[in-house]
Image 1 (cartoon, rainbow, N blue to C red):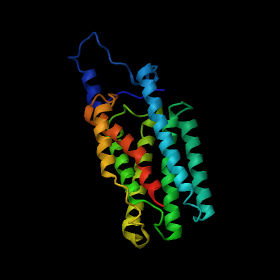
Image 2 (cartoon, one colour):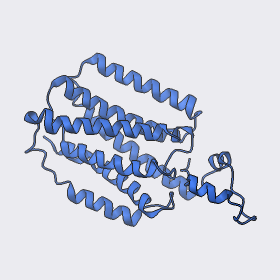
Image 3 (cartoon, rainbow, N blue to C red):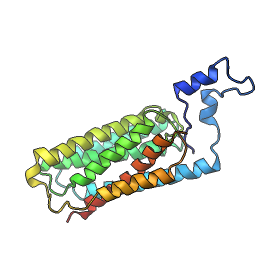
Image 4 (spheres, one colour):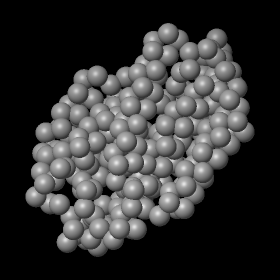
Length: 246
């Protein structure tokens, strides 16, 4: 599968302008969606998908080790709800397209954050939760949304990339910010502040520096391409402060 190029309203308006060259005809939306991806865009999308799935898998593993105190009925309900939603999106929205796996990955990332919220609320403690990891996760989501909310160069090519992908990231961002507030304010007495000491500023700076050098051009806008790539790097590194905790 590939990622969709930018088809912003302004670009579409220029394509329909009467002053446009008559020899260049814009393709309809259905043709753009169904056109076969190039080998370079396919390889880049596979790299992006692998990184997202690895990052989500690490978060799920970390959360699973901390959610044993959460009520089993709430955990089972969360799993059942997300599995049902993922199946519905894959079969009824994406029509079984392989690119929907990108949407599945962000949905399970949202599930991981929800399980962490359930664990914290049920135990009444923020012990074992890294505020620095949550801050990096929130930053990664903001960087990613700054690109995917405006342009569609890094979205799934199926219908789940129209709004479900972005809406899931927004839900994950709100869950992350709510849990960060709980750790730093509501349950600060149980927060392991001394142990949560892994420096994150160098990792964030390095992520943005590498993103400026290594970003792709799927949006054809260097700033937003850089922001998306920085979000990918920061999101992958966000699990390190959590693993740093004893």
